[in-house]
Each structure stands twice: as C-alpha cells, then as structure tokens.
Image (cartoon, rainbow, N blue to C red; front, side, top):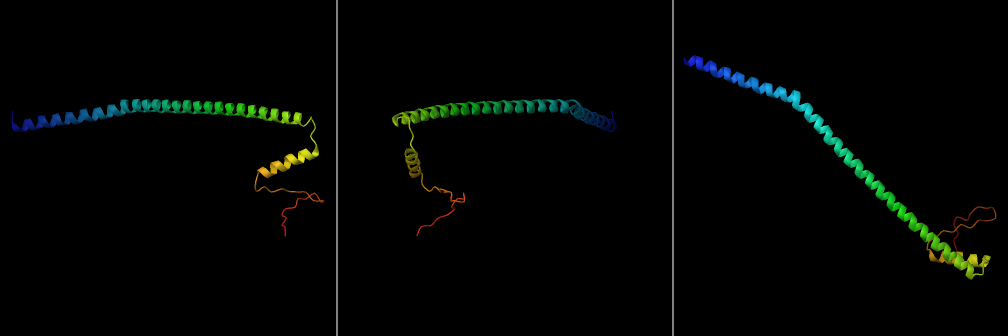
Length: 132
C-alpha cells in the first residue's frame, strides 16, 4: 500500500471512532438520562416518605407527653381538692367571710409586686394611689 492509502485508512478509523463515541453519547441521553431521572425521583420519594414517618413519630411522642402531663395535672388537682376538703372539714364545714379574707390576705403576702384594683363608688378602679 502506498503512504497515501494508509492515511485514508487511519482517517476512516478515526471517523468510525468519532461516530461510535457520538452514538454512545446519544444512546446515553436517550436511555441513561430518563432512567437516572426515574431513579432520582424514586430516591427523592423515599427520602420524603422517611421524613414524613419521622414527623409522624415526633407528633405521636409529643401527644404521649401531653397526655402524661394532663394525667399528672389531673392528679395534682385531685390532691389539691382533697386538701381543700380536708381544710373545710377542719373548719367544721363553714367558711366565714373573715376566714376567706384571711386566706386572701395570706395569698397576697406570698406574691410580691402585685397590682390590686379596688372599685370606687362609681364602679371604676383606682388606677394609682400614692401615699404621703
């Protein structure tokens, strides 16, 4: 073969290689990209499902905690009511206005910095009183 023919064969081989590479790229875009998109959507769906399941579990645990807190609050209320009933029994079943005032004063002494509104004759509260 002459040198000229060898150059033509190499060029034809190069063209064939380029054609195969182009075919592979086109095949990848026709078949690979759609499959990748489907796989990607599947993974995204699994991640969202896992997140939704986790959020559901969190809500369930919060509801259980709220239920437990309400049960404890109810038990505390029962104990408080039993204590109040016991106090009334000690008082011989009668709450006098004087005793009620005493309880109110005792409760006021336990909390500092309270504002007390006392109605006047017109039914309006005294907003501020200063002593001299």
